[in-house]
Amino acid sequence: MKHNFGSFVKKETLHILRDKRTMLVVMLIPIVLMVLFGFAISTEVNNINVAVVAPHRTDGVHDAVKRLDANEYFTFKGYITPNEIDSHLRTGNVGAVIVFASDYERGTAQATAGIPTRPIIQLIVDASNVNTASSATAYLQSILLGSASQQTMFETRMLFNPQMKSAYNFVPGIMGLIFILVCAMMTSVSIVREKEMGTMEVLLVSPVRPVKIIFAKMVPYFAISCIVLITILLLARYLLGVPMSGGVGGIFALSLLYLILSLSLGLFVSTISKTQVVALLVSAMVMMMPIMMLSGMLFPIENLPRFFQIVSTIVPARWYIDAIRKMMIQGVPLMAVWENGIILLGMTIVLLSISLRKFNDKLE
Amino acid sequence: MNDVVISVRELTKRFCNFTAVDHISFDVHKGEIFGFLGANGAGKTTAMRILCGLSYPTSGSGTVAGYDVMHDGEEIKRHIGYMSQRFSLYNDLTVWENMRLFAGIYGLTSKQTEQRSTELLDRLNFSSERNTLVGSLPLGWKQKLSFAIATIHRPEVVFLDEPTGGVDPVTRRQFWELIYEAANEGTTIFVTTHYMDEAEYCSRLSIMVDGKVQALDTPARLKQQYAAESMDEVFRTLARGAKRGE
Image (cartoon, rainbow over all chains, first blue to last red; front, top):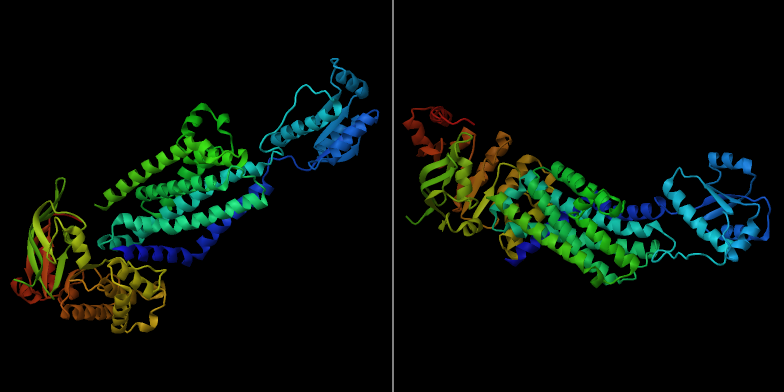
């Protein structure tokens, strides 16, 4: 019977549309997260005040300061005396102090001529925030190096994300998180709600096949997720300026696979939980936490202890986020991340078959 | 007999060592209101699940609307209606949307759906509430609506599992009028209940004790047989013999 599937999809859509609050949350969360991670929470070096100590304000020093001031990430606050360094850093007036040696010019000349020389610039950085301090140091060094020596020993180039924008890093992570939230959490809660309300009983006595009930439930959530996906991609491209040079098609295709995976996960959760509260808790604890901690969204997987690195291999988001990061930021095509795709596909098939079997068992 | 709608012979359901339904046999005729009574744990629900095509018997045989409970579970589901003790319409859908959903499930065309739901709403005197959210209706109305929707596809048998739980006596009375109407039109009603005054309304009753059908007859004859004033007494006399607990 074809039109009973249609009636189910219609019903599920109505459930979602009637529940305006949930609907709003689902639509707003991605936007809020994107803006939050993209602008507010960032590990970028931004607006760092810098003071300079220079015994002789030579041309070389002026040149360096000019470069510094011209840079949008640093603000030159003025020259100070060595005695003031401590108080300025302590009060937080400045985040870093650059101390030029009194023989700065001579040292530069020597370095240019290739003669080994002792350090001629000292960087004193407020490291109370380690992340900011280390990126500020690296960035300051590269600025000063340019002015200190024409003949540098090495050349560093930041590929793919030359400004080290953290939004680039977060967008794939947010995608990995949000689809689990929408698909897995909401489908599982909506299936369990029917069990709790007793409506599932009536549906089971009807001639509809249980599989159909489930798939009809997935359709509207899938549709919502697609809208969310498009929203995220648009925001990422036009608000945060993520390059997506690998082609939007590939990103979209992989995301669709991940959506299906999340839906299967939701179905799985619904088969193991009896009440909506349990379903919510399971989704939050068993799915959200690993995604935040073990997927590479916040912490690089390479930095995790060995044990957690192994655990992370079963977190689907890890593979998804990794692939999306490559496609969005490095700009590789879908073919280059085929391994991640295969792993995700495998996980989908396994999860879907387990939960469908479990679901059918339950009914007997 | 041609008018037998449900026929059960030596139906048994065992779970491991526990025999939930123990060799029960009975026939239910077309247009009958068949009361299926028993204390909690007597095996009513298990028997009913088998008859609804939700579970298979361990042994014995049975047919519902002409379909075998062992092999044609899916066909049975198509020909029966079901209303459970828990209210099971969707609160966040309107009266009409609920009707459309269940009509769709049973494969009614949109024209049939329109016709049938108008007819049912008229009968319930409920046409004005067509677009009201079900959640905002009083419980009694919800139960009546549930019953109407259980018959939306004109099933041959309607299974009612304690349909009037938690409903006030006046509404219960009205509810039974609906049941009578449906029975008069030839729909067979298979109903479980804990209210003994309701048992009196049934054409025939079966009383299950410990998985067996201990008594089966019209309410009047049962009372006569057990020399009882009311069905309540009959029931208690029989249930006293039960060995199983809750």
